[in-house]
Amino acid sequence: MVSFLIAIIYLAFISLGLPDSMVGAAWPVMHGEIGADLSYAGIITMIISVGTIISSLLSDRLTRKFSAGMVTAVSTLTMAVAIFGFSIGGSFIELCLWSIPYGLGAGAIDAALNNFVALHYNSRTMSWLHCFWGLGATISPYIMGYCITGGFGWRNGYFSVSIIQVAIAGLLFFSLPLWKRKAAENTDTNQSDAPEKPLGISGAMKLKGIIPLLIAFFAYCAVEQTAMLWSASYLVENQGIGADAAAKFSSFFLIGITVGRFLSGIVADRLGDKALIRLGTYIVIFGTLLVLIPMSSTIALIGLVIIGFGCAPIYPSIIHSTPDNFGKENSQAIIGIQMAAAYMGITLMPTLFGFIASITDIAVFPLYLLIITAFMLIMIERLNSIMKKK
Image (cartoon, rainbow, N blue to C red; front, top):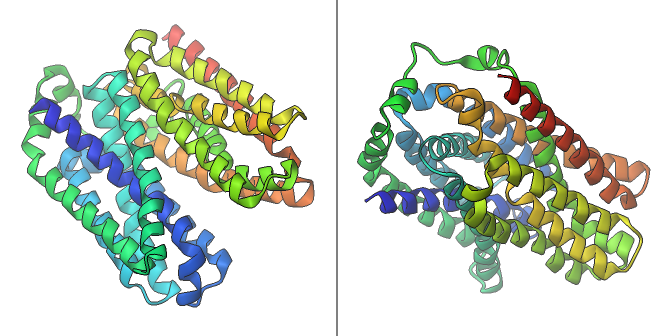
C-alpha cells in the first residue's frame, strides 16, 4: 500500500504539470475565437502566478488544518473545475476568472506535496516526483495538438485534461487514509507537524539562512523559465536556425530536465542534496558557456540541452533539503515561501529579459543566464556556510 501511495503522489504531480503547457499550446488558435489579442496570454499566466503565490504562502495554515492529502485532493479537484471552465469560456474575461482557482489550486498542490515528500521520503523520491511534473508538462501539448489537428478543437483539449484531473482527484480522495498512515509512521514528525500556531511569514523570515535560500530559489526558477521561454527566439534570431527546428530543439530543454531528474534520482541518496545542487549548477554554467561562446549553432543546441540536464536536480534537491536545514516543524512554512519565491522568479525574470533584449540584443541571452546562475551559486554556498555554523 505504501508503493500505491507513491504512485498516487506521482500521479498528482503529473496532474500539476499537465495544464502548465496548455495555454501556450492552445493560445495561437483560441485567442482569435474568443476575441483576445495575441499578447493577452501574458495576462492569464500572470493571474495564475499571483494565485499560486497566494496559496503557497497560505499552505502552512491549510496543511496544518486539513492535512497534506486533503489539501492536494481538494486543490486537484479545484484545478479540474478551472480547466473545465477554460473549455467552456466564451470570452477573455471568463478565462481570467477561471485562472484564479487554477492558480490557487496549483500553488496549494505544489507546496503541500513538496513538503510531504521532503518529510517522509528520500531524495530519490523527490527527484522522481519532479520528473513526473515534466512528464505531465510534456504530455499536455500533445493532447492539445491532437485535438486541434484532429478537428476536435482546443475546447476539447482542455475538456480532456479536466477529465484526467477529475480522475486523479478521485484517486487522491480514495487514498486519504494512506496519507494519514504515512504521516503517523514517524512519531517525531507527527508531533512537530502540529505546533501551537503556524510559523508565519514573519517568523520564517527570522530564521538564519532563509534569505540566501529564497534568493537562490528565485534565481534558479528565473534561469529555468527564461531558458524555456526565450531559447527558441535566441536560436532563430542569433543562430540563424529555422523557426520549426528551433521550436523542436527548445523543447529538448524540458526533455533534458525530465530525463535528468530521473537519472539524478538514481544517485540522489548516494550523493546527497548539497552535492547534487552544486553539480547541477556547474553543469548549467558549462552549458551556458557553450551557448555563449561564438561557435556553431550545433554547439549552441547542445548547450541548451546541457543547461536543461543541469537544471534537473537543483529544484527537487533544494526542496528536499529544507527539513534538514530549517527543521521539520518549520518545513511547510518555508516550502510555501519558497514556492512563492519560485513563482516570482518565473513571472518577473523572463519579462525582464524581454525588456533587456528589446533595448540591446537577444544575443545577451546566455550572458543573462550565466549572471543569474553565478549569483545562485553564491547564494547556495552562503546558505551552506550558514548551515555549517548552526
